[in-house]
Image 1: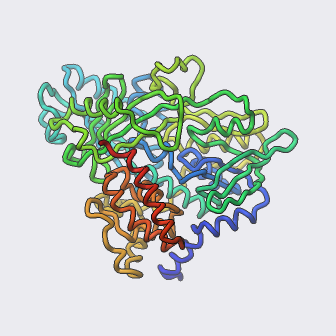
Image 2 (image 1 turned 90 degrees about the vertical axis):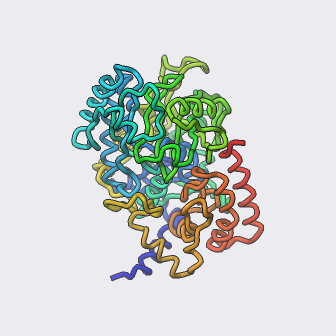
Image 3 (image 1 turned 180 degrees about the vertical axis):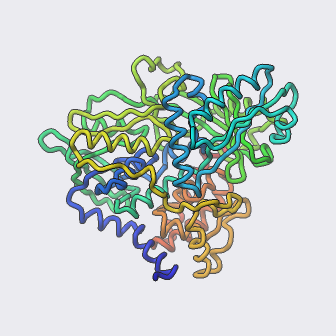
Length: 537
């Protein structure tokens, strides 16, 4: 029987970039090549490996670098979609929420929400609506929605504004750590035989007799170019799907309309309890959430149509003001700019459908959040739209489409029952290391190798030096940003603390990856530049 140390050493080899590149070169032709390592791409890969197909994932940056690390941290059916009458989407999302709670139990938890009511009709109205929400969840419901008194609302939300408060409604939804789930999905796919690579950019598509036959990809670390053959090529690049579509057909029209959502992170004192707040209608008709997350509070979001997309979108001043103003209407302590620990912006890859693209002034909240699968004349399979909660179903539908096209031999999907790497029943969510799930003890075991790794990186956050080592050895982290933004969530929780952590993180990472002092200095410089986008002056 393997010792714990032997098991860890074997997994180090499994997740080592050098080994993955060797496996990349061994395979002459892949069954499925997925372009994109965010929620959508990893969902496609997960379903593909569940059926036993030879699967390759290529991500131009890091896993969940874009939209997939910038969500509201909710696994939910979408209360506002219920209000819009989109019953099918809500039912699908609630089903997927239940599966995620089972399959990734270390990262997804039951979160109670309270809707504070300031109108006489609010209690009955929202109670009835949320009972329908419960009904749609069926056996995968996380708990019943109930009307609560004014006194109980105040007890649960001690910082809620009490003037005019009449009552509340409590309901349940899911909460998670988005980029941690992405990393664990990548690990799960690798454990099932896939090759999953970050920092490997697709620069072109290979064609044979006018049909897509593979991709041209570049390892951004070495500059090496690969021509990779595949039976099915899936474009799952989120807001960048149009870039890949134009590689296939230069005159392709845009399929995705980006909408920016911004979140502010505040100290836990603004929402000291365990309940989240849901404000059903803000100035622009959107839902506003204040959600406890890693002992901080995430507040958002906005809905701003944009003409351009990028990997690092920036929050607009009017978006920051919008969130502060709307949150201030419901909290007894009004948050100010100086209270914001971090601000992050994400772009939703909304699928623009006919009749809904009403110009720049239109409301993107009215654009469908359902996913769409398109197949080009040359055979490129593109998946657009959707959201984190339904990532697995999106993957299953995409692979089903490839099978229906005759590109893959029919095999039954098994992703609905696949346990995600790290899953652990009944985790202690008060433990700072809970996100590692079943790997927690292995992370702590690293401290026996070097006692100094048991020290914190910064007093403001509960991250240990051992976590840097773990991220480098087992989680495919390649840069300081990879670690402080997505393996740890320091950049999203307290941007200034993350900057203080950068030099030591660079030193530890350089030791693991074999880089010199100049590399460390450049990494710290880049990270400080990046972190400026996450702070409010």
